Image 1 (cartoon, rainbow, N blue to C red):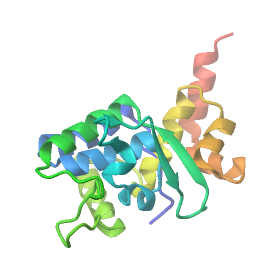
Image 2: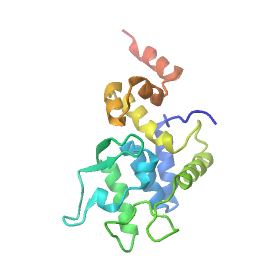
Image 3: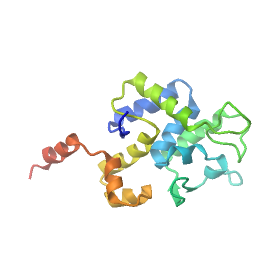
Image 4: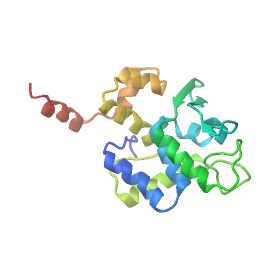
Length: 192
């Protein structure tokens, strides 16, 4: 197994999301959508509870998700974008009894336990295989996909480094998985 890679093709990203949506697997669709739109590590994402994203008093989504990262112990403040809110709304509507302390990505096992990292990995691997998405894709690929797509939009690597809470630009550059195709695109689009 090699280093995980971002999903570079936007059509593949949409196909991955649609895979779960078309099968009525709303929890998994929301997991993928939130992972792609927040850049959270899977361990931090899976531990989210509804009270982390939704204010039950005002019945509105919070502006930010505030997470103390498990790996770095740094605080990360992430705005909840429209795509993330849409997926959360779909999931919320599919649930019968919504409790602020309920895990968003609830497992079928246990009273209020989130799905595990291994389960999340298997969910993603199965979809990627069925969709024939190329590359070494895993849970961490979703985090890397956020950075790669941000970079393609013109976001400076230094800002992506800050978003990721990375300690060096070198780590961020590895995350972006810039390959020869990306370099070729720069040259072929230059035409000065």
